[in-house]
Length: 519
Image (cartoon, one colour):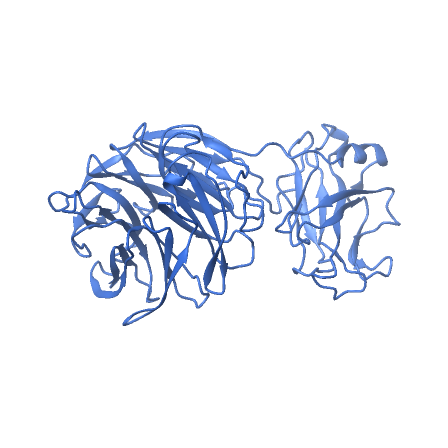
């Protein structure tokens, strides 16, 4: 039989709005690679289901692979020499995919021309143990500024995109079906892919470093791309990198460009299959080369991570604000203070369900790893969701916890999703639940906590962020007498009339959360 917490004092001591501890990216091990590592990618190169890394080293003309152990550590680098035509530079772009259908990722690398001569690309097929064999199955000759691997025609086989060059269709067994479309611009630099127009097929975005534009290629057919857009990205800047992701939570891909010599980033909002320049802002350093968009800090909003190859923060995090617009002096969180960072990947490197980062550094010819110390929410031991509540304009609101509610925990927190953007509401706590739910006050909002049967009730004001996420830290006293006691939580929100008003008083409530104090 469960018991209620004894009277008010212990509960009020427990349910006190605390501040969330500073969340950060903690530096992990560094790994030596070849000379001048300009590009990095992730994949599974030995078939063990863990994240591995591969790096293109320009001056030693080789590839370094680091095999992941799944706990945040990697093997020492395995070097693989690559051969290009004479006069080519070493590799400085790289991508991973399974080109021959053996279930293990392979690599494609590209090299720029040296003084107008040479250049090219090659494919490295994995042997399944972290080693590779070079093949010329896809390899074009001539200058290659960027390579990308993706299934462009939806046949389930990985294709390769070269810039300048074309989409080369793979046959799934290490061979090619032929070239499908040209991909080029005046001064091509970096490629990325995503479903820009929401037609269910991947599109290509190419950054042009000479004319401050991005080229968007959509609607690939057997005869080429059906549409090519040239979109101004805020020049006069040398655009060195481009990334796609959802910054404003509307389900459409937005864009960020790294503007090398301008020492800035630009954000472009996705609109109906195109993009609109919204802002240009500080990159946290100088000569930014690459950027990525991902919810790095687990707050429900797309963040930006940038590499800066000269002075300033070598690796910088620009936290998302729920929009695609950033002020010029937007807050920047330093990840790596120095080291001339060139490229990065965002992935869960240690299987803790939190975003981590691996980046390449010219100054030390190394790969640095950084591990997210973010709150991850779910249904840990000692918590259980119940009921639905009254959904708001964004749908049902879910209440979850980040960890088991153990006595002495200073980091226990709860989160509500789908609240009104930047809206106000209340976290409610009681010692008796209403498992069925009742519109206690006749205002169209179903309560899952019994306000009248409880010995005590506590409300704490809440404010949601721009993505409709509200967090509340609930430090738990180190009192053994609390073990086994239960507290029931729910949130209540007021919605602006101009958002929607499909319930009597514009109120919504979340699901309930049963919290049982653990030893």
